[in-house]
Image (tube, chains in turn green, brown):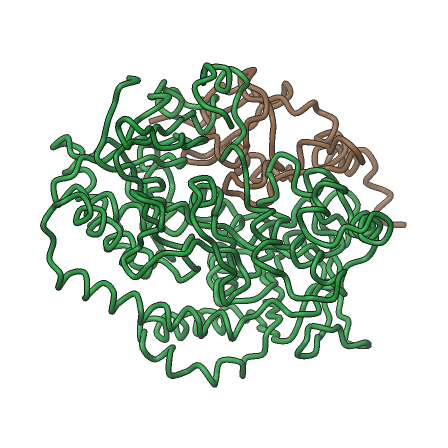
Length: 490
Length: 108
């Protein structure tokens, strides 16, 4: 188990990773596909455990045939021995390149250690690869708001995951808030499953879209999706309120109500516009945060993308700049599943070419053209749905910012005023936000924004990167660390 | 196929039903239980937040394995879930019990 060597390690079996793994196998490379989930598909194509419930109707899934085609290719490649697929497996450390072999060892652990036997079976604790394609995906971006730590308040994607993965409705009366087109499928999914959705609160203005229609028109399928959601929202009578935010969430031991209000174009609340809704579930999402710990771990260059998130820098063939490491999907800039698939394929072709395999230049330019088109659409979407610049003005001193370490906004203000913490890294060292279980995955973006706003400047790449750097990519047992046996220095 | 009797877990000594394919977190939510942990510092109740294994808010003990994420561990027959019990008593289950014990109060 410890001497397994593969041409390519692909991390993540979502849209980008599935595309990368199957494309790499199809040009003759041996692939190990490592995924924290129990079955392929990632967050986008999350579906109930098919070993338990069989094939389902996949209502609400877009591009389902894209997924099933890639999954068939995965199964064929697995049977032929070209892909070794490791589900339920968490990559927690990428060793530095060994000089003698120019290879990297990947340290693995189980995603979880209790539950059905087939999911917690022993798997290899390490594999070694010549090349690496990182497709770590992302998760909902969050802005803290008073009361967001009450049970019943969830990431919009978490509400969606409950529906798509577990066919469970998070509550009876819901409100969905934040910004971006992803709020629509979440609200519609809840309504179709029988919940009452009292409102979608979109912080942006609908007319923000108008200047970007040309870019959106380059991807006609997105227009169709939008029309489908609009029809379903009308059917379920879901009110869509733009320039509206959740100002506070109320409840004792779980969410009971929210107060919403209108905001101006900077995101500043407009007095006298408050409304109260009784709800038992709140879904929050402000776009997506790409998972950057693995790109940062291997030393990849990063930048602040047009949506304000930290993303990895790649060239026009998905090369990270670190020899043998390619990055695809949301980690290079949030752009959705279709773009992730194209990037995953391109990364595999580039890796194959770089290791001396013949590939078709026409395939490369076709994929590059596609990616450019999707990127244009993504930029239009991000520009139309910005995080409001005045969002830190919504915080009260007692609003929890870091949920793990229970650091509130007042603590951060004190760290700035009394201890001269002027950037996100120093705030973290002084007041401990981002030092708990999730290692700043949930609050990192907010901490960067708060640090910048306390100093009256824009958040910088360095603010974000200081929150995105993690020595280990997931919590591991001390025994896992001890097993490293002083081979490497963290 | 499992029948309904077999689709039960044990949560702090109480039977917790689940549907095939559900995570433990989903089974708890289905039972009306929205929190099963309290925070270290302020003792605040916590349950599912990110729902996809990122935030670690939903930790509990399953079959003696501590710090498992309820949102990612699949429900399985006979699984023994331990939450410490405090939150469960304070929230959903207790509310139901209170309602049953004091029906006349609702007319006040």
